[in-house]
Length: 265
Image (cartoon, rainbow, N blue to C red; front, side, top):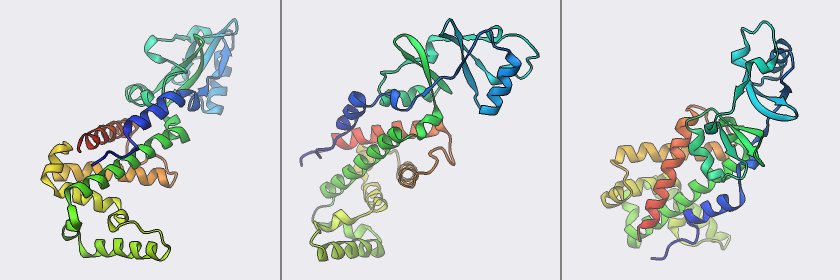
């Protein structure tokens, strides 16, 4: 059976070649090194800034954190400046795909543009449209491949006896409605994700080839992926009910699952 035209490589190519962290990063607000630290702290609290840059000669040379200024009584911001560590810096041309695993272990990154720090990116920026597009595209490719595997491992409608009758009836109703609109293809195209998940998890060989460990573990993982899809579809907070670290880990697991799906012919 031929591979689907849409592959993980295509998705990766789209985001690596066209979408960089420039599309999610924010400008780094900065204050002069000579600015009064108490006044800046009050301003940061008003603006709800956790971090601001420190400017020396119109160049951002470091930063201060609001949390470290709470006990400050007097002085200049430069006295509290922290120097950028190489691990905190990321080039503005970095592909979006490479940002997620880096943010899994750090709360923020400072963005370099022409060797000068100009922006900042945090886990909160993963709520933005480009990241949502990436994650939704990843889920869509997984679902397309699960359907391909169902076709491959359940020939001649043998899948029907492994689903609850009401699930088959739902697919049949959607199929008939499409027939009336002259849009119908075949019944399998009207299975929902939960149906494809059930069929894949029911097949021992597929379970092994996809390295899903066990039916229970596979179900837990695929339900988490589906919950993420629902958050994306309804423009909800992606980290609601979990952590950014867990979300990034889930995205990495989804990418690995997609790669394994595509290796099955």
